[in-house]
Length: 451
Image (cartoon, rainbow, N blue to C red; front, side):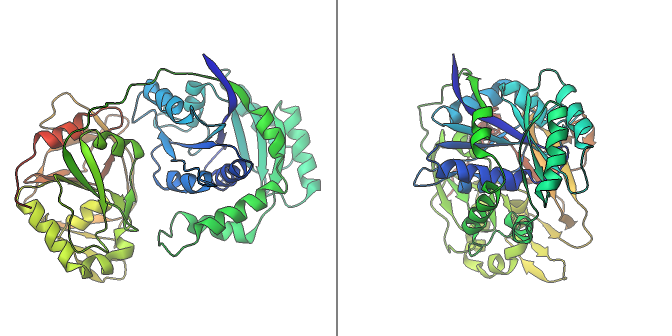
């Protein structure tokens, strides 16, 4: 059975076209109209989903941004997530990733694949700063390249005059794509774009930034027509029943300005094993009583001084892990469990010392890409994930690597998965929203400890 509602995917020819700004603005504008709006993000990005949640949550109606990724999960899982989270929404907005057809391998896992999988139309965002009628063949190519894709409309970015927009409007109509307006360049919005995802401090006023973006967009984009054009029969996909049985475990999750890169579905799966409690490695001086610790990624390098200064928490974490407590850490969380962290300016801060390695931000290059993880103790199970970091391990002792890691093409990657006692850590952000083998593996290896 299909439900008629507003649903679309916002895409672009390439990264840097303005998708995120427009997505946040539209989420807020829809919510201000009294619509219940559900945000989604294509791909593994955990920053945009946090911003989506803030933009869509309005008037006490809290919404959670959800990742849709056909590399880290099956198409059926992506369809199920879309159905489950959009079932009570008036409008569903999916922000694409990179260019429309850019995937892990050709167009596999791309925004185009997800739009086709969900059966929803695409609205393009085109940076037209140095473009006029050439927008016609560009849009025509994107519209006709994949016949299964419904490219319904376009919004042009970096257009400073209505006269410029008239050329683009004519180009879009000749390409068979409906023009829905444009965005002039705004210095204020441009500065906000650069800092919105990078400044994770609690003092940064994201709310006012999103409000300014919405105000900017509504002046020159036809919101009414966008809502009409994307009113479609959204197919209902079969939902996977969630487990009603709750375990008796307590899972303590590090969550503050330093650690907050968390996939929402990962927490949902962990909650099936028991109760989740949150704590701050920056502010708290004691760990909660828990059967497992989870240190997600984040920006620990921005808060290295505060993390290091909280010696009481570092000692609590070290004692917990050395006494056999089960813990899992990824990326920034792994850096926190190391011995020391060196920042770009050469300053060194002591960390927990659970693992015998130091990490550094100096002389580092970007490590980026999808990963397939094969744990030695989980034969035949492929754990999907994503790696994204600028830091590197500077020195390490005799540590055990417990997994083989491959990239999207099946080629071996040198990223280790470390284990000491019952603590596991790596640079990889795992997604276990569909395959629950990894959380089950962690709890199967629980050891009684006195903490």
